[in-house]
Length: 156
Image (cartoon, rainbow, N blue to C red; front, side):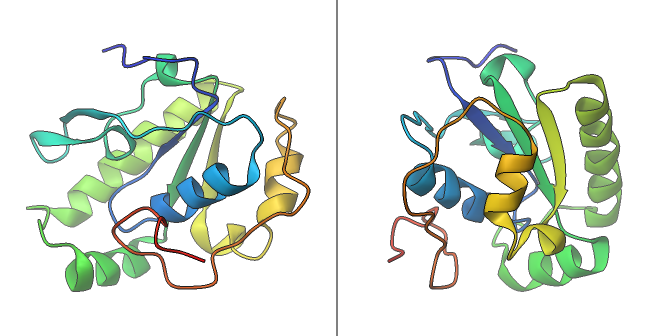
């Protein structure tokens, strides 16, 4: 499946409730000349049409890729509390996702796999440490409110 519609700079991947909206906010508000857009694709995990960020990774979707995850227990709590469309077997899905994305990151130098808990508070450091050919805005913005369903568009 090739989903590239523009020369996307960065594509985000992760299960629902894993921090993808937070990463999208950072990309949209901090990277110069970003052309980040949400795309839809068939989600192999749920069997439904979904945002590409929640699907199997596609190396052709962008130049760089960020795969984000939360530790299993933390993700399960968040999934049970906030996800309206529950995954039938969340533990199996998480384990499958982890395996797929670790393999994706291992095979491709332009793919990073990040732990949400390690990333928070060190966002700019991480972005710079990857050595990607991207420029940042003069001021690095971090959301000041809790992330919502609208990918941070309602954030200050």
